Structures are given as structure tokens and as C-alpha cells.
Amino acid sequence: MILRFISSYPGMYITQSVLHSFVALIIVELSFFAWDIRDHQAKFRYRMLTMTLPIFMFPLYQVIAPQRSAWYFRLNTALFDSQRWLELNPLGIIPLAGIFLALLMVITAVFVMQEILPIFRERSARSDPKTCQGTLDTLDAMLESISRQIAIPKPSICIIDEPLPILVTQGFKNHMIIISSHLIELLNERQLKAALTHEAVHIKRDSSTKTQLIYLLRMLMFYNPVSLVEFRRIVHDDEFICDAIAVSLTRDPAALIAAISSFYYHPDEGPQGISQMKERIESHSHNLLLDERIEKLRAIDVEGQEHFGWAPFALTASVILAVGYLVV
Image (tube, rainbow, N blue to C red; front, side):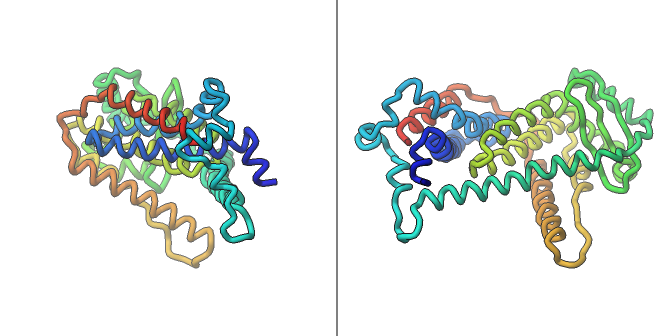
């Protein structure tokens, strides 16, 4: 039954989309090395190849060359035939296809726990939203100046009474920056300006829309281990890009580093239950991202970003499509 599913069109799509994602990941990483790509704006675009191309490669190949699924192509032309490997049964208990599908089920469970359940928890938490306490003239003036500098409509500011450092941007067209009173107390004027500039750059880049589109791609490939990793890396790249642009505007990396440092999270010590362990893992991951952002800011070149080369990008996409065609 497992082998029959693997041989069906849905099974071939799932199998080959995973394999094509690994092909794209390897080729993209080799491209970073070959062309010495360090700029996160460029990495963001290259990694989008890994998220997007595998979704469409199998149906594209089937339209162009239906014979690609035939045994003759698999035997004489293909570089890698997944069905021949998945039919192997080295332990004599279950074929590799069963292990492969079990792995995809685990990835699906991780997707549900990491991506779906937090959405429902967040929506439940919104049943008691924090009251907006208005804004401050100094913040309004600061954001007005930043908005003119990067040519965006000035977003509104909402201060909430919250004992944690909070700074988020909401909205797709009419943006609102939400900041906690605690964070305002923590940061000085330079640090607040750096933090608000970072959020304004997110608005300029339309990060909310981009993140939603990338998340949609992630949902379409919910079973794919490569998408699980690359989604996080792309979202992190967006943070690095906004950090770099913010520093190029403020010329003050130290202020942004200080602002980022205020967001370190240290969960309270307590019983080692499952929920506490999960919270510690999440806080550790959150703090690692902050560490990486700070490390990159300390080594940043405030003179600007690298020029993006479209020719290497197009070549990379072409190689992914060419190699993927021979992986069935």
C-alpha cells in the first residue's frame, strides 16, 4: 500500500518536491560559496528559490515531458530514481518508503505545533487586548522624521502598559507601531530612534506582506523538512536586512545593538515540566537570533549593501531546474 501511494501522482509529487528542495538547497548554498555572497538581501532572494521552485517543478516537468515518469527515463536518463531506493527493504520489516513517510509525518507534526497552534493561541490571547494609551510627542516627532527620511506615510504609534519590552508593527496598508511603556523606559533617545527606524524599514520593505506570502509557501510544503528550515532562515534574513538598512540611515550601530539587547528573554526557573522545557527551548532560540543580529551589526559596513547580480541568480535558478529534471 505504501509503495502504491509512492507510485501515484500525489506520492510522486510529495517525494520529488522534497528531493527538489534538497537539490535547490545544495545548489543555493554552493552559489553563496562560489560567488562569495554575504549580503542578506541577496541571500533572501536566493533562498526564495528553495521555497518556491520545488512547489512547481514536478507539475512543470510533467507538462513538458510526460515520459519523465516512465521506467525507461528512470532507468536510462535520471540521475536519481527515488522509487528504486524507496522500494528497498534492508531490515526486512518495512521498506524505506515507510520510513520516509514516517519522517514526513513527524515534520508535519512539528509544523502543526510550531506554526499552527501558536496562531490559535495568539488569537485567543487577543480576546483581551491591551488598551492603547496613546503616544508621546517625542515619539511622534521622531517617527515623523524617520518616515520622511525613507519616504513612507507616517505610521501611528500605540503605547501599551506592559511590563515586557515589546515593539511590533501591525497592519498591511495602515501600519501601527505598538511599543510597551517598559521599553520606552529602558531605551534612551538614540536607542529608541534606532529601534523605530528598524520598524519603519520593515514597513518600507512591506515585510508583513512578504512574510504572509512566504508563510503561505511554507503551508503548501508543510511536510517538507527543507521548507521547515528555510522559512526560518528567510524570516531571519529579513531581520538582518532591516538592521543593515536602519544602521545605514542612523549611522549608529551601537544604538541598535543596545535596543536589540533589551529583548533578551530569560524564563523563570521552575519545575522542569514539558511546558517549561518548551519555553526554555523557544527562549534559547530567540536569544540565539538576537546574538546573531548583534554579531552582524558589530561587523557591519555602514557604507551600504552589495550590488545584487542577476546573472548568477538566473544561472542558479537554471541549474536547479536542470538538475531537478533528472531527479525523479
